[in-house]
Image (cartoon, rainbow, N blue to C red):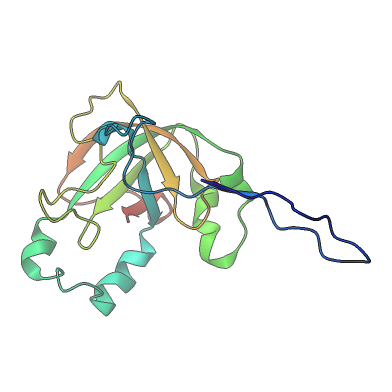
Length: 169
């Protein structure tokens, strides 16, 4: 987070200042004392499954191969809550967020290059979570579209309808 302060108010029709506080996520979640919060507190950053087709087509990462594709997996989650910002999203590239609903089962694929190189897992996949642990997710492209879900199971391939299929980023 960064915060700026107004040194001089606009005059004579000058433009108002941009937002004075900006927040952005990062994948290093630490306490104010500098201690790691642990994997359980990292939200799952997700986007539409449609992007995975482009990801494969462009082979954006040298990590993408038939070997790593075989290590891909799918996690099914049941959505518990979501912010109202998801249903308000109407930008063409972000309309997929409108289809996330409370109580639905969604599929999230873990594919390269989203996998961490050391353990071939995706951040936020709920690796050690049981079905009662509430986990957090956030939509890529709109940080205000976020919510919670519970892990149902991990499977080899996703089988949810297209509008309920996502990928870890």
